[in-house]
Amino acid sequence: MHSETDKAEIKKLHIKDKEARWFYVRERGEANDTDPTNDNDEMDHTHEMDRTDEMDHTDETDQTGEGQAKFNLMVHDRFIRLCDHQRTGGRLVENDYPAFVSFIGNTSVGKSTIVRAMLLLGALKAQGETIGPTAKTIELINKTKDGKGSCMPVPKSGNLDHKTDPTTMGVQLYHDEGPCRDVDGEVADRRQAETSNVDKFPLMMADCEGFQAGTATPLAARYDDAKEDEGVGIIKYPVTAACYSGHGQKGIDLFYARVLYAISDVVVYVTKSDNAIKDDLTSILEWASAAVDKSYNQSSRKTLIIVRNMETRQFEMADGAYSNADLETLYLRNPHWKNKKLWEKSDILRAFVTRHNQMVPGDRIHNNDDLYRVLFHDIKCCYIPSRGEMDSSLERPKEVFGKLQELRDQIDAAVKEERRLKARGFALYDVPTMNHILTQIFEHFRKSEGPLDFYRAARRDNPSPRNTKQHMANFLRLAFEHRDDQAVVRMIIHSVALMMVTYVWRESLARK
Image 1 (cartoon, rainbow, N blue to C red):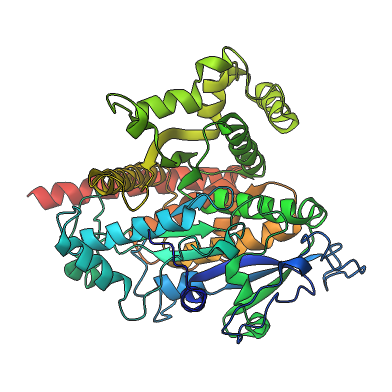
Image 2: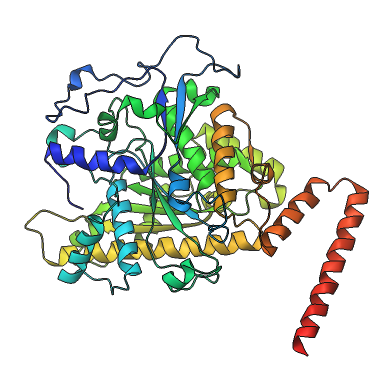
């Protein structure tokens, strides 16, 4: 959680963390703010402009003629490098089913710091450590942090010149090194799992650029090299959908929000203000409603975890008896709101509620709890205590460490539940399939305001099935595609009946 103050060291951290870059949106013709070779990193804030003003206002149209392209979407091959670094195309990763946890929130709330903590806690668990704030733990953390070839999110700069600057550029992706899990979600032997056909569930953590950054340019962008845009493993897409390209930085935030909602199993929203929680919560629900409106045929809704970072309440209370349940009451069912509905003053939510009640009359939204239920599978709250100043109580680090560990446990439990729901709906996607779906997601959202059909995204040009489960999932997709053809339906019924008889026959032979 250290906030580095030395500019040269901050620059080194960001340059190293560029390995984790996954995707970002850049305005066409956008130039770097500083020369990355300048070791002094003297930033002239007087020449910063709003990204909306920096847009290329020429009538540039992408080659497909799909509309005005004000932005470019830059996608790195980060996912496949992490999940299939040998580029086997599926042979070694056909039993790997990745899950995604995305960290979002306004700028400067500490998202990168929390992502870093979650990754370090996972690494400690993988080493079989009994986690606790001990000298041995700290030594292991430093060893993990400085490991060969590893990169970690860069915490908020402690330099006063960077006080108003966001940290992350676009979306960074990290592979969690937590314990390997077997098909039931229990801890499995990692070395044995890596050399066998047992199902594995790698956990990916995405750190998103802060929303509402305004005129500030992320520090990571200051150390960017424009030539990187033409590098190997990077694909450039023009963003032509008017809902993004016509609204400056808000459009970029919306693009990140929709893509991450479509990808994620768990969404972690980080905030550091209680006073603005009603507005923050309304923004979260607007963001989720827009994403739900723009996606369908998903197997389940997401789990939302709201993290109150830098909390001091438990230290201010006489008995110190502050809990996550207190935070949940304050954030989700605040008594001061009385019976006010969160969608009353939001055009986006009001339109969503109206559409939902018309389309799903048997599951109408009457109150805030109904709205939460429709948009998310579950909502949890967790607070991270403020680390305090240097002269804070020696108990403070233990409190911080314990709550970070509690957040990590919440994330693990939510990912396990989402995995269970996906397995029940035949929607667990292995690495080759997920890589294909990610391509379809980027392609869809960059040029369309319409809904994303997950069924079509998953089935088009899908890799050939390699095991029984993949064959069954492929069979069900084909059956659904031809559900209106009576001849095909009859064939499906006969095929399913034959498979059931064959299964029972084989089972009976196995018992003899």
